[in-house]
Length: 283
Ligand code: PLP
Image (cartoon, rainbow, N blue to C red):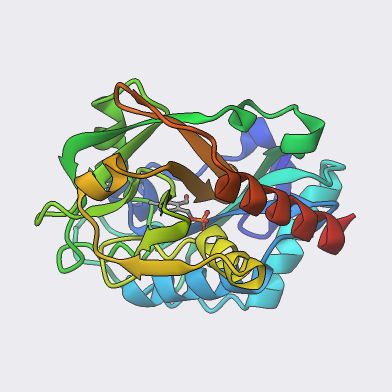
């Protein structure tokens, strides 16, 4: 396997960054998890825009254009002869003198790693085809005014602590006021009486790219949709629920704590529509 580090393809075992790198020391970095289908990135522009917004939040002015990033990702896929793949692209502020105060990102560290990720669902090869178990945990989502949830930074301790609390596949977090936010690495949807609900972007959630695609698909399919501020009781009363992220796509929730959940018709319809969209664009 070959990875891309600072403009060079290197064997995975030689792909290293300095222990003085601020991404390693402080989580001072932005990243994107992408998915390549048939050799092309799904929703590239949305990912590039979100990475840019993350770097803006962190004032990481790295000066590397979207075209250059895309080229490095494609070079990495090609070097590994991968068409269906998981792709992670990280940009850190780089190596700086050992003090917390950040300096300008004039020597950023840029890393692209990839691994094979066959299409799940119809091909049935992914562990993520299985419905997820989920649980609402005690760890609260960090408030936006402490660490903006819309920035996808290397600091994933909030989600890490949430996942440590449970053996469920996904740990769902509430905000400080007790409203539902999202999972450690996924956005939450639920269906009640035929209406699709998901926490709105005004809450402390990452604006998931899969979330946006699913909302657009729901619109096209004529599924009524609401975004809003929800309490745990709203989820407990749901007829069906699912999680979305780039690797899981649309993943049904099979249980919430001790309560089993049906994989309902709206979830199936959206998962099928998502599959069809990917097929139509990429194969
Ligand atoms: N929320 C969090 C905290 C995430 O880490 C992720 C993805 O990793 C998502 C939501 C889903 O985002 P996307 O659909 O862009 O992968």
